[in-house]
Amino acid sequence: MTTVGETLGNRVWQPLPGCLHGEIYPYLRKPDLLSANACLIRTKEQLLLIDPGALEEQTRDLCAAIRLCEAEQSRPLLIYLTHCHIDHVLSAPACRQANWGAPAWIAVHEEGARTLTQGDEKRSMAEIYGVPFPPFAPDLLLLTQRDRESPVPRQVRLSPTRTLTLKTEGLPTGDGRLLYRQRIPIGEGEHLFLYPAPGHSPDGLCIQIGEILFIGDLLAAVNPMIAGIAGWNRDDYLLTLEQVLWLLENGGISQCVPGHGGILGARDVKESFRRLIREARQLGELEEVNRERTLFTAECARELIDEAEEIFSAIAGRLGYLSHQLEILEEPEAAADCRALMDMDGIDDGLAGFRRLCGEVEQGKLLQIKFVLAALGSVKKIRQLFDRRRLEDVIQPSLLNRADRLLIDFIGVARGVRNPEEFVWTDLQQAVREIVGELRESPHTDRSFIDASGCREDYLAALTARIGYADLFEKTALEVSDAGPLPPVRLAQARFADTLTHLLEFLAVRGASGLALQVGMDREVPSLRIVARGAGLAPGIEARKIHSFGTRFRMSGAAAFQAEGTVFDILLPAG
Image (cartoon, rainbow, N blue to C red; front, side, top):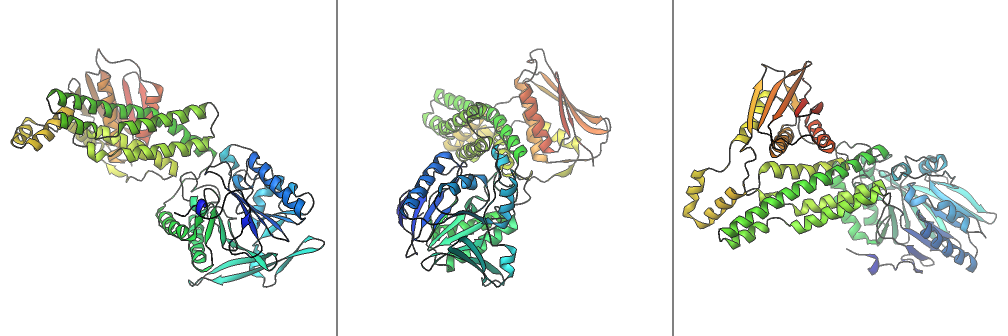
């Protein structure tokens, strides 16, 4: 992929491609949430600043560059904003004040002007960042409704001697729709072109100068915790992608400057836009991304790390035990193959990085939204390293299912996707009996082991599977009773089975000699009560564990999960 190193240099003045009389000074940052890329452009008649960003150091550097330009030649400064999010615009007032010797104007789409003037913390994303957003008034409204409706160009006076002419026209894109374009002179016959680009934000703009197109955050708009923010609209976003894709193919553009990350070649951006169109079309209903959801997702991330360390330690422990037993049986190659089934070092590194993130956010060193996105990156890395298909012959399905669901559920929470499983009407009594029946049966019989003895490869596979299987209920009796016919309940059946299996295994490992499952009615609500007994049963269960079980049962369709001593109640609303 074409990068900044092959195109424009960073933080140096250089000719602006496609513009005979302009120079550009890109201020590019490593991709992060705190501040956007900025670009200064100068002609003999104007200074232009695209998206000043939000960090103090960046503001100081840009203001210093503006003052140097002003010292060389006095000219108006126009600050163009691709959209009103805080990481792009917070420094705009300070940069407006930097051009002491000439007028300085902030220009934004009329929809964004309302956000800035009102100090709207929701539309600006300041609420999600957890920081204040001081209101400020822009000076120039772009691509207004009146501009689109009127054939007459709009005249704007920048100074007693300088006037801007804003001419708006509709470009036919071949699909029966128009792409509006606003043309603004920047000096010596050169022009800047504005195009509406809503979807990520209602006030989104793409800005073209010469062969360069500034595309704001279009490349990031479907990312988790971005898709669903206030003002996000999938239909608008799809239309924007299609129209900007047409522009990239027909507008003489060679390079694109995104809001975050390096400068990209137009060909690469076109490929990315085609992929984003496919992804956006597949997005279903999303929950709104706001402060509450950010905090909830952060809480889920902190819960996940405890569960993940427990699950992957258990899997690693089973693999370690299995490989050790194979070495005792003088099967070193099989033992080595067993150890290679999972990249435990890589997963440990991912979990350790995740744990460090938890420490940083608890110490206030990391914004909640940055923590959530970094945690999501860790989870995706772990999921790539965890290939359950390689483990299915040697690790119990219940453990693999737990690991799978734990990772997938967090990705779903971060994306704002509602539980994708199909909820179906279920006979609770039958479902519980089937789950317990499967737990009572061992998947490995003596007959299957003997049958495999004729082929060494089959024998080793059967031996490995037999050693790897742990019968957690060998010393725990499972009993099921019911109180007669019950109304059906709506359940995500596979998720419910996995969560109930986990709870029963958890109690068995803690020393329960018997688990009685009683299906019945509790105050006219179908319920499942689990009573654990046994002299060796460890007393008490950590609150975080109870909370975790409650969350997963509710995701399965339960109305509530209650625990008191060694009695556990799952309430399931009837249809």
